[in-house]
Length: 157
Image (cartoon, rainbow, N blue to C red; front, top):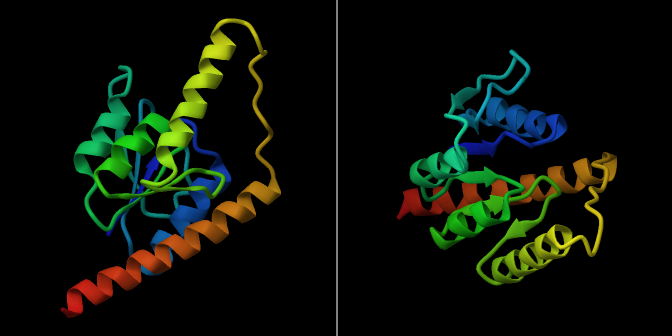
């Protein structure tokens, strides 16, 4: 098991939660990004810096993540690729992407992009606050526990 972060736009608080869990549980943490991403030196992190090409980090994660890994990304097209590979994917607000919800999430994302690009609605981003951090931490802990349980059951069979 490894913990992956699509680190280009992942909030610091989320990166720290993942890193603390990795250190506590002895699970490797890998940041993939198009540039070095700051992180606390107290946490062992593998930083994979990729060329500044479109989707380079996404492609790297999709090609290297394995069954049992947990990936954190806010990139919905990447989440779809990973869910299609039967991988566990969370966004930075604690939403778990699944086969049941990823199609709808991708459709909404594409619709909103169309509205923004046509000027029908202004682009806006909601602030990432303490409630978002708590939601992420709770969902991350639940998902990680489930993956660890599944891994232990698989190893025992």
